[in-house]
Amino acid sequence: MRFMMLMIPGGYAEAAPDVRPGAEAVEGMMRYNEELKKAGVLLALDGLHPPSEGARVSFKGGKPVVTDGPFAEVKEVLGGYWVIDVRSREEAIEWARRCPAGANDLIEVRRVFEMSDFPEDVQKVAEGFGELKS
Picture (cartoon, rainbow, N blue to C red):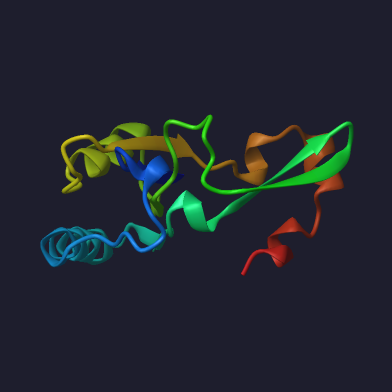
């Protein structure tokens, strides 16, 4: 089963564009990433720049509206993610627990939909979907 582990760093919603993690934090995270890789469960990972460099596209009445970051109304934002392939939700949670996250960070663990999770009629409509993925 594939799961996403979504890193939500405390205070990142207000972070300045030039904020970067320090060497000690990066070193701990690299060791953790290496553990995931050695265990054969890591499929993908990335870190994200702060919301102050981002934009949101909302659809008001079906029309796209762009809002530049930072986003005042948001308290928790995504700072990075891992995609892992494990046997169970419990195993995914165990990997999240092992992360060297900061004192006010949060990791949300979410299962990724597989086509087999959908009814047959939806699978038929989505034929060829696998070819869209890289």
